[in-house]
Image 1 (cartoon, rainbow, N blue to C red):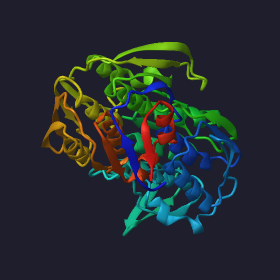
Image 2: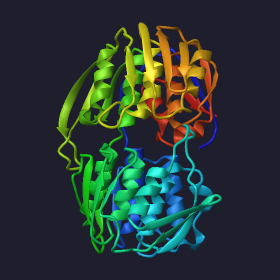
Image 3: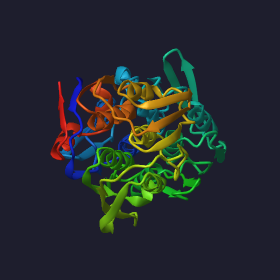
Length: 432
């Protein structure tokens, strides 16, 4: 949806807010469902813009997709045809890069437009291209297009080292390897829960992937995949977003569907910031991973600055939670160093926080010093990307007066029904 959010801040929130399915798991799983010619059921799909866009792209190549419930889809990729692929939509979302691997397993030659998405800096595609080359998949960039040819060669490299511990690049190489002849070993693989969820999904369909959860993956190629059903993991970014929301507005909130193992370092940093919380209603995650899932209850507290927080590969602090944590630090006593070493173009949200009254100094494209607490004031502000949009919502809810957040579409790309969920806990928010 397009439009703006109108928010009136400084209202205490209360009640329960639910974490939905993870965008960063649902997208690669949807793309990987193209590998199977049998029907696949995917549950706990978040109904967000990026998912809707990818579904339309898949339909444009003949994949039959229908919702059988609010968050459940049935995928039938028994026949595909790349002649009518929707190039315009591919250029809008970065996750469409996953189609390189998915389609290369079903089609010998095709082309797609260069993927789009959040402009966070120089997000190079070399780790993807290098990995495909090692697998015998030739990719040539011609203008706005990638031309892809899969030779299905049996004389391909059996081992490859990721040049960067990239989540999406790891997922791309996994998807591309499942139906290839022989054994593929991936060294330096990202180990994020999203990668684990993708591997578990593919194994349910008959893939042979081992080493899941580590940085070395072994994939034994299979001839075909079966059908099956999978429940998408809950979103760790939403977990971090809602904890910061509760702490920043000094509200008593319960957050449902939190998996502590997915946000270990984030929880340690929240504790370091003097955020008081407890874990209730512990149970086993129904996805069959064996992880503990619970409700996390946050209590109002006086916040302390965290001296330094920086993003790292999993199980480190998630890059997508860093801007949200930065907003929280505007309300914490002391000085915090926010270090985003991954993306040199992401700190534009700091300028918006300063316009609202924050005391934040941008040292360089990767680092900012935030001094708090500062009383924020409502302003007309902008969502530059998905996570800065969530950051602006939290800042507006912490601020005195009314704020207008432009480019609501960015938030819709990753957070389903966000204004409805926030209204249910007492937030004064509406969309125009």
